[in-house]
Length: 133
Image 1 (cartoon, one colour):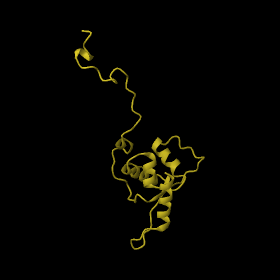
Image 2 (cartoon, helix red, strand yellow):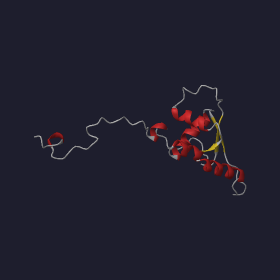
Image 3 (cartoon, helix red, strand yellow):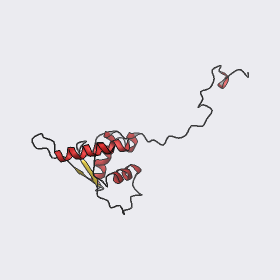
Image 4 (cartoon, rainbow, N blue to C red):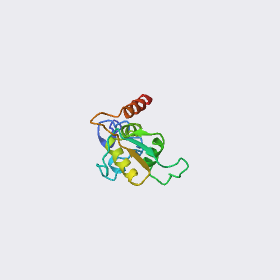
């Protein structure tokens, strides 16, 4: 029997089979949003988001995702930039931002489009943010 592998099989065990698996610290995106895929309010991915909480306000009772978004939006950032920095899908971040806006934790600034022309100030800010990444 000494020539046999795992559980009497002649196949050698997978290298990680003998090591205990670490629990994953990642939470599935749908769990973060409570299974919701659509935000409560509609806004563009280039919409700018800013925190309305002061840096001295205690946010420790909020979820880790809310805390991260509040920290990121102490400087105005676009929804797409927040998604990229958190490494979360855009849909998940939109749901979280909409929830936070309805709770008064952040403010969403929709881009104003004049006859289909993008706001140059907005484009410059997005470009600046992208360069910082």
